Length: 384
Image 1 (cartoon, rainbow, N blue to C red):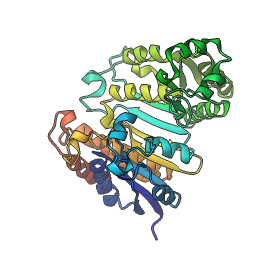
Image 2 (cartoon, helix red, strand yellow; image 1 turned 90 degrees about the vertical axis):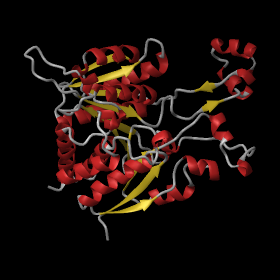
Image 3 (cartoon, one colour; image 1 turned 45 degrees about the vertical axis):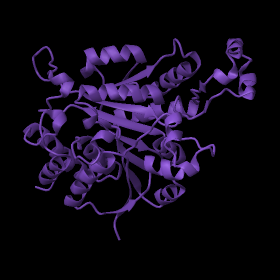
């Protein structure tokens, strides 16, 4: 019997390509696992009206953790247009399956490391960052994003129901929306709790403490989002009191997009609510070469799902053109979570060597190697 059972969720588009690359490396490294194929993604929305079928949820509950490729998501009107004819008009609503997984399994913490590797021509637009002594300064940031609340909580309305409007009318600012006609009003909520805010802040500080990092930065907008942003800020300050040796600071979401571009080497651990964390992690990825180098982990108390942060890129599906390094760094995060420390170290070292060599590169790095060529090169180093 295998040591681990891994839910294998290729998803959509290039998700299949990068998961194939991952399997090459996992098999070559002799990772002791059984891979359980699980249906998820756009095809199942179109044919079944459910992008996350019940059978997949059941299968995941019988596995150690999940590995996920990429997902296609579209606006509600487009989603309904692409339903099979027999499913149209039945009141079905599309909901992102990866968001569904995060909520169903209470994967409260999304961790997204963004690290520059020597030799990557795409690091910070190809420019080196140096200190006053002229020495190279690597970018090594980790974003902690609250994963189940905030703007991605899924509580939305269109048109705005009369009952919801009435319930909100204690706030006089709501009255102007009545004049527009409730049938013309859409509402998305940003609902946050003390528990959720406190937990993600603790996760960030604990990670900093464990890894010897000296700075944790909160990304918010409390001057405008006074209640939700204010709550997160208060929770952050309360948590920070328990870590006096770690520098804690707060930056607005708009300001961080400038400061990280100007001085990316200054930041280490970043923590944010769901949407702000999603936004800033893409900025971080851009500093270290793009989404082809950006892994992520969705972590709960007892379960985890690992996925690269890039999308499904349908135009490249099946061409084996895209960069698999984000997927392979995601596998490294899975190894970390499973406490397969030696495997994690070997895999990251192999990835770094292939990047530094510069001989096997996908198109985004200026090369012509395929997705699987890169995987094989990394596997060679990981098993040398």
